Length: 356
Ligand SMILES: *Cc1c(COP(=O)(O)O)cnc(C)c1O
Image (cartoon, rainbow, N blue to C red; front, top):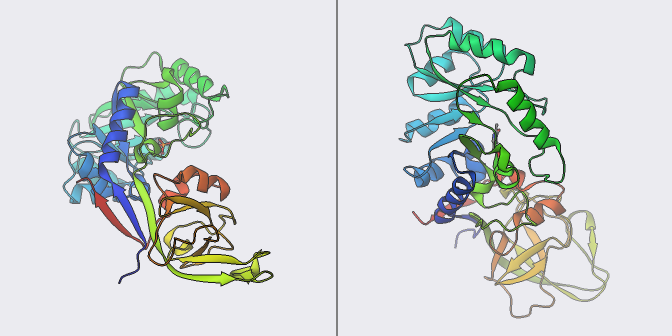
């Protein structure tokens, strides 16, 4: 028997979530499949969405080239834009759209002699996140310089939100207002919403959404119910069972000590597979359909769970670390992080696809 750890990826759920997002948004939507589709496998996810999605977005050129090499057609936007003129030329040749968020990228476009109309530029404006993007006072001038380049086919105006998943704060509305004030006089399509924008900020819904975490069914606002289906189920099995006597400690650092006689299950899943080491004792985990808890420290290749109350569960029982039964948001919260990081970190385990 091979090691039973796997990430089961449900491509029907992926397509379902995409359509939920696009329906809510009302306009076109790029499926954001950067970072290997948040750990789900970019090529397979793109293939599953091909013909359904209006286009794709990734972080940088090499991620886009991989998709083109795998035969993915249609728009692919690189959210960080090009890093040099070599990439710029290759992106234009392959019909890859690009963010333009700093002057060096604009200069590279001005200085190349690419064919007329070969560049689709997404002019990124900093509306308050203070990360990437042009300052408000620069927008008009940068837009004019892009417009003057014959290589530029069209310009989409974009911005990104810092707190879209915090509906109780005013920050996102302020970013929307700032963006509108800075761009109201400029032509072109608009793109404001990421997943949080689509879900919580109807006024951010414009021509193009950029749907990331929602696609994978990990709701950025899990207290509300948004008809999303988890795409990944991170699974393994119990491969050994042992008893712990009162006073005995378990695992690295002896962070857990039994005070009654306990039954412990060993699971083939560890932090080298992407399960977070900092998930504390008590993190929920499902086994044969019931929910129990992790015990002791997560190690590189295995973790340990409490089976004291489940005598029927033993070697070969099926474990779900997150998926349909265990919300990845819950594990992330206990580990002090967000679902995005846990999903992106999944590695070493085999990805098994269903719903093709
Ligand atoms: C990653 C990313 C997104 C997707 O964000 P989600 O919160 O996952 O929906 C959208 N826009 C930009 C610029 C991004 O970098």
